[in-house]
Image 1 (cartoon, helix red, strand yellow):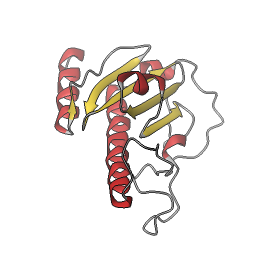
Image 2: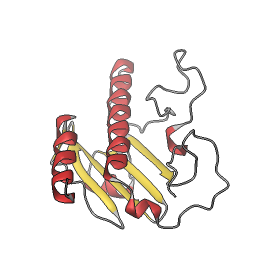
Image 3: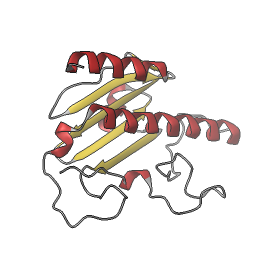
Image 4: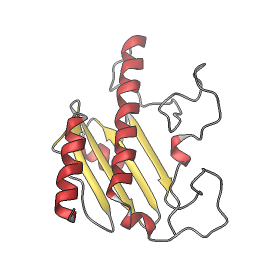
Amino acid sequence: MDISSQLDHLNAHLEATGLEKASLGGECPVECEGIIDGWYLYFRARNNRWRCCIAPTPRGAVGGENPSVEIYGIYGKTTENGEASDKPVDRFGAGYMAYDVAVKIIEAAIVMFRLNIEMKLQEGIDREQESCDVEFCVCGIPMTSENHNGRHTPLKEVTNDQD
């Protein structure tokens, strides 16, 4: 599959999750923008870092102002089984992140965003009133949940090994 077809497929996949106007693409940085449930999503992977933010305004999503969800990490920091690596971090690895990896991060952010909104609604809090203070695991379960077995890593620390 050529790169254009791959991007068309992945953008269609993101739109199926509810992300309107998905626009994944690029290298150095790899970026994606879109609208999820009326909020703005921005993903960016450059140098050795990635970040995905969902906020009430486009400027807030890009600048991280008043986000509902903001996740970030260093790309290339851990081994495949999640253990710390002694290898140096590739200074530019995130800029060449595989698009399917970016999609997984974006999907995780969407799950956490919707869970955060649901929790706020249950607590009677205006969804724009305060930002998320719940630390989530890669599996999407809050770290404080009784259903969480504590063997997972907080999402903000999750990265992928790249040789």
